[in-house]
Image (cartoon, rainbow over all chains, first blue to last red; front, side, top):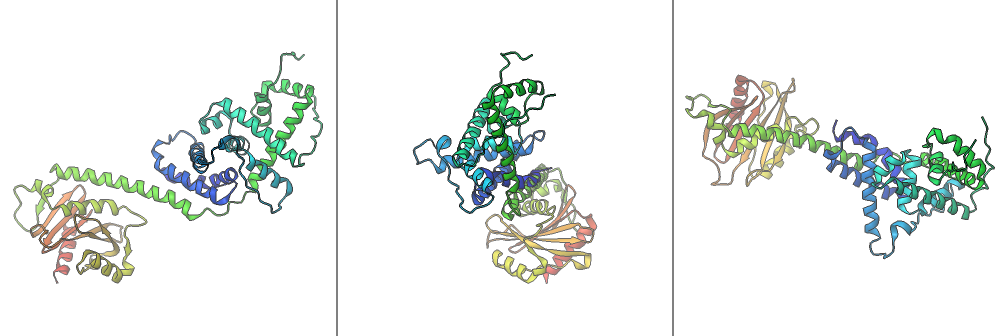
Amino acid sequence: MGVEQVLGHIPALRRYARLLTGDATRADDLVQDTLERACVKWALWQPGSVLRSWLLSLMHNLHMNHLRDWRHDDGHAALEDAPESAHDPTAEAAERMDLRQALAALPPPMREVLLLVTVEEYTYAETADILGVPVGTVMSRLHRARERLRKLMMDNGQVRRPMPLQLVKR
Amino acid sequence: MREPTDRVDDDELHAFVDAQIDPSRLPAMLAWLQANPADAARVLQWQAQRVQLRQLARAVDVGETPAALTEVVAKAAAGARRRGAWQQAAAVLLLVAAGVTGGRYWGQAADPDETAMMAASPDFVREAVLAHAVFVPEKRHPVEVAASDEAHLVQWLSRRLGSPLKVPSLAKHGYQLLGGRLLPGEGTPRAQFMYENAQGLRVTLYVAVFEPGQAPDSTSFRSARVGDEEAFYWIEDRFGYALSGNVNGPDMQALAREVYGQLER
C-alpha cells in the first residue's frame, strides 16, 4: 500500500483540525498542508508505526509554524499566552458554545494536548511522541489546560457547583 | 489501612480522569478523593470537561471531504507510480546503452554490428521507448486527449508540433486509438499516440518533428528489441517515427507496415 492509505484518515484529520483551529477554512488549509507534507515525506513513514499519529505529528509541526508566522510581528509570547478569538455569537446549545469559546481561548499548545488526550484518546506517552515533547511537558500542559478551562467556564457562570463526590465502597 | 504517605499527585488525578491510571493505584486514588474534597471537586470538573469536549468533537460536522484534499494524495500516488515507471524505463535504457539487446534491420541483411544498433539509434527512439514504458501502464490517464475527440487531438498536436499530422488507423489489426499526448523533446515537442486491442495490449506511435536541418539522416525501416518491447522506427525528412509495443515480432511488423503505409500516402 502506498500513500493512498492516507485518504482514509482525512475525515478524522479535518475534525481534529477544526477543533484545533476553531475555523473551518483554516482547518482545511492545515489539513491540505499536512497532506502535502505527508506525500513529500511518505518515504519516511515507518509502515509498522501508526499512520494517524504520524499525520497528527506533521499537522502539529505545521500548525506551530503557522502560528509563529502569523504572530511573528506581534512582539509578545503568543504561543503560550495570547488567546485566540474564535467568538461566535450565534447561540447553539449554551453549554457547548461556552466550552468552544473556552477551548479557543486556550494557548494552542495546551489545546493540542487536551484534544489529543481527551478526544483522540492517546496515552500521555503517545501524545508526547506526537508533539515531540517530554511526557512531563504533556502533563503540565494538560494540567494548565484543564485548570484554565475550569476557570474560564466558571467566569462565565456556566459551571455548576460540583455534586458531592459519592464513593461506593466495595 | 492507608498509609499517610500514600498521597496522590496531580498527574495521577489526570490519569484517573483519562482512564490511564495504573489499576493497582485505584484504591489509593479513591481514598485520596474521599479525604480531599477540593481535589475531588477538580476531578469531577475535569471529568465533565472531558465528556463535553468529546460531545463537542462528535458534534463537529465537517461534511464531505473537499476534492482539493483528496487530489493532493491522489496526485502524489500517481506521481509515485510514474516515478516507478521512469526507474524501470531508465533500467531498460541502461541495457540498451550497454548493447545487451539486439537490433536488426528489417528486410535487409543483418547489420554486422546490430547489437550496438539500439545504442546508436537516434535520441528520439530512446525517448520513444521511455515514453512508452512510462505511459502504457497508466490506468487512468494514459492519454491527454482522448480519441473520441480525434479532430481536436490532431489539430492540437499538429499546431504544437508545427506540422500537420496524420493519425494512422490500426483498426483492421484490432487496435483502437485511445488518444494522444504531447511530450517534451530535444528542441521540439513530441507526440505520442496510444492504441489498445481487445486484450488490453497497448502500442504507441511516437512522432518527432525536427527543426529544419536538425533531423537525423533518413533511415530505412529498423527494429530493435528492448526487453519484451519491440520497437520499429524510421526517419523521413523532418519526421521520426517509432512504434513500440509488447507484441510478438511478426504482429509488430504488420502494425509497423500499416503505419508506414498510411503515413506514406
